[in-house]
Length: 212
Image 1 (cartoon, rainbow, N blue to C red):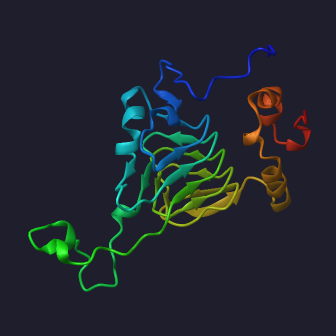
Image 2 (image 1 turned 90 degrees about the vertical axis):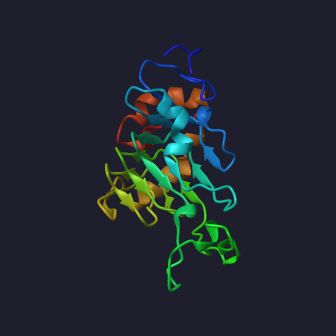
Image 3 (image 1 turned 90 degrees about the horizontal axis):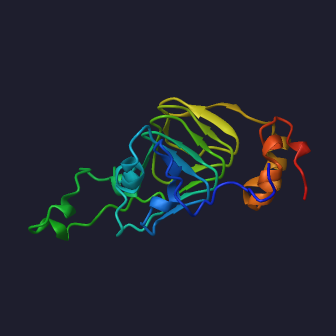
């Protein structure tokens, strides 16, 4: 590869014919943080990217203040959804009904207390088609979320999960290799170093990654 070419600019829209693009450039909500090069893979409608923060991130009410934080180089499959804390109802009451949002006197009743915190996704995570992530879940680096999975609890680094509810199927690397990969943290390299290692990043043996 030519030395003057170091990949696409993550701060610009790709504007490709397919509706797949870097997601951060379509987000305006300050409680949503998307890392460089993370993309949403729609099918053929660019409007899906514009609508992502409203149609794929659900029950994300500003008065709750929870955040969705997604790292770099993540690959988000079509129809993947993140359910935020606004969807939670307290289950330790006689009724789970949200009386306080119905007004005309009912707003004086106490609101729900359930808040599981921010939803945080690491780097280089692959979400298959139509995944659903529940509030407060933490997903580690390099994880794979199988198509149609319902993720209800935290996912370790480099785990492959699937099902409803999602369970660990396997790990992509052994424990020592995962530790080394997290130490390498290639997703934090500059674009030139990533470009120099593109061929090696496509192989299994990460020990050949160039240290420049």
